[in-house]
Length: 601
Image (cartoon, rainbow, N blue to C red; front, side, top):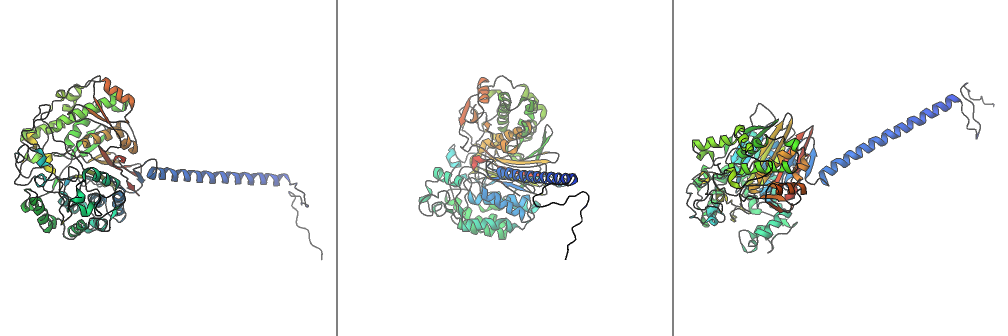
């Protein structure tokens, strides 16, 4: 049977074996098909390349060269410990808001890195809601002096204010967190404690920072029956990675989770803390615990160029942060840049800030004229007069800045910042003051008690420069001592930055430094926190600077008469924890100076 040959269209030539000849139209179609395949391959390669670059970029931001930084689209948490940042993030992912995550993260730091903070201490919290119809608030849960405290109680012996029962102020942290949660939290109170109870009971690898502090400050712990079960369970101080457990503290957290602050301030926890404090010579009473109240306050509000600044009032150092920003507003810091002159002006503003800080105190105890002076310190006209007395070519002796009193130098602290998916922002700074506070751990509750009485001024102790102690910060019953803590929120349109610091008297200068670097000198968030810092507290009249500070800046400061004290960047002096919301992303930065790592999603 014969086969019918296939139809041959006029634009085709039937091919014989080995024949590669094609018609012109066929060749043209082949060329077009080849080009389409090449273009498709190129586009696919481009998509893969861009995708790989994006993955690399975000992985790099999160995990490698930009250590401490995390970037997401929803919410972020910045604390001094990776595990606590992750814990806060888990609260956000479980439906909690920024306040829930901040409280849970703070409890985590107080459970793990308890050398600097914990529920035996106190601090400040600032909250800025995303809903503009809800006003921002500050929760002041700074520790207060016991009712029996008097300005002459130490008889000139400052050591009694630093260690032992007489150094203990009424703790404020739990009452502060409870009222903040009642006002702004979303998840059940117990949910904020549950993961921390698990950490305390099941254990966590001992953080490097804690192990380092134990080696310096905990040499007596292995032989101390109150401290050894936690920090030397095998007869030696915990080393990095060894299991840290706080079993009694887990029980304490469980009681607070079930019963709220009442069990801490009026129940069995209060009884145990008072008993232990009095056993070591303290004057803390059950009435002191019962009567403690956290203060709900309006934040201080100011502007810096096109920024809105929200911060805490006295006895925090918020008023003098505003003073320093107002002074710097008299200079075009963006045009001047981060060179020698820019750093000179930054240092000069710090010197005026430190002079102003000597005139702050607990506003509930200040006279009308003293309150008026605090308001004047925040006035832009006053700042202009200070700027007029700053020379671009030289610095001056400390008297030029007109400090009124000596001021106490606080210590320790921890700080954390959170922004959630809705745009609510929280920053908390809390402390037990000196490393491991008063040196007292209640063995029943596992709580480390603060030594915040040391932050009051003590009569009769004139400093080496002839300045007398601040009468505004003398001890009085119920009074809250001055603090460098300065949790702050900065906004510009839809942009939002929340930040706080730790490091005692270096906190407020580090916050100032960060605002200038981020907004005047246009560093990104990572570089803002990573770049070397300068610090000046007027007395001693020395610029304390990280040794990696640019050589030109060092030379320029020396030329202007500044005295430099250089120290290693690895040595913790001040640490910033910050979260920023900008251009659809939420970026969180934990300071590498304290081995921090932020978390975001």
